[in-house]
Image 1 (cartoon, rainbow, N blue to C red):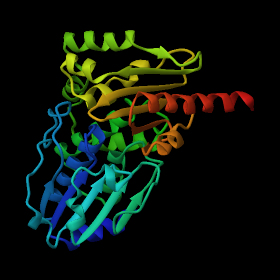
Image 2: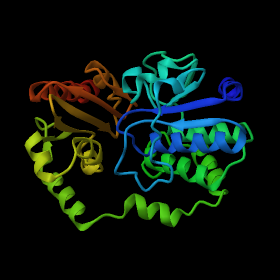
Image 3: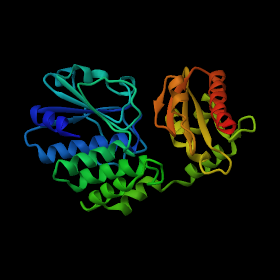
Length: 316
């Protein structure tokens, strides 16, 4: 599956690795892991990672991105990771590269690179990088393995989500063989300050049920986000699963005002909510997607569409 991209990596001496904006553990883990794989296995390559900064995953070795000029793309290979659409890619300069490639596990939306490797059967993009390393018989360093493993753990919900398969655990075991310090990793991922726990408790108190349906939501205003001293993305992505694992709730959405738009994080334990996200200009996975809407009114329209999914199921 990865022959084309391995061939391209061998062909180009300068490689620039991109991923989506507001990076999660998977976007960063796959990006850092691939960079280390290339450096360790293909001598003479100049490899850059680019994108916006992150606070949540700043503990990851290699999380500080490179700052490069437009001329760096001359004669370069640009690899885009964990991005379903061109719009989601943080740095659009990848289009300046001599050759472009994409590795992604989201539901297909569009073709926007020369080489496309999209496989929705993987729980994470990092899992695809692990498969690339194993299938291509590349040397795997502890640093690379740790980054990739971090991406797999976070995007699989600690190996709980539906995308987790026997292959997921086989690849995780392969990565662990490189000597990953899981104790340190999990401490960085899950240890919280008391203030953070108290903030999360506040979000739990805000959970609302939409019209007595199995749809729950939280709506966060811009003033509320500012008062918390948090950025909108941390509230939106970071707090959506405070609504997970509630008996009788099959779909949950976290709405967060951010400037002139409302960030929407959609999750479900039962339904394919991706078409609803796509309807509002977003995308993602069957049971975990995102989108942006204009205002509170459109957010309520989205809830109507999600409730309709559950009503259609009841009618069958």
